[in-house]
Image 1 (cartoon, rainbow, N blue to C red):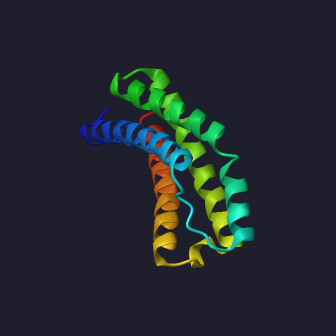
Image 2: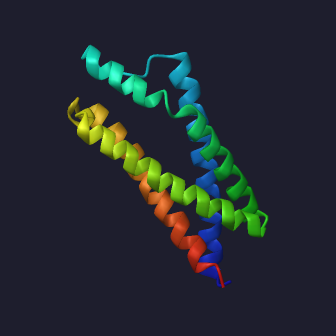
Length: 140
């Protein structure tokens, strides 16, 4: 494995671990404080219903990212497998969030809400694609 690819693998591992911690932290904050700043009662209800479907899948994804990240750092083959699964799951999650946010006008609730949601969505998509491409290039 060349030096650049080796560096990308380390970056991928760290990204996975940071995202997993971020996801876990988000859910702790979600359940312990009121993060939802939506005044429209119907939209707030729809948003909370949508979000309530995600704790279990996000917990699964956090575990996959942790296993993938640790595996990459330890240079184990399972790290690549779990990193690919995590990357694909992040792309799916990012697209699902963008679809919901677009259909329900979440991005137009205000600059703060738009920046926060779009940042999270692009982080999922970007990291997912980065993981997939990095692992694919390391397959030799």
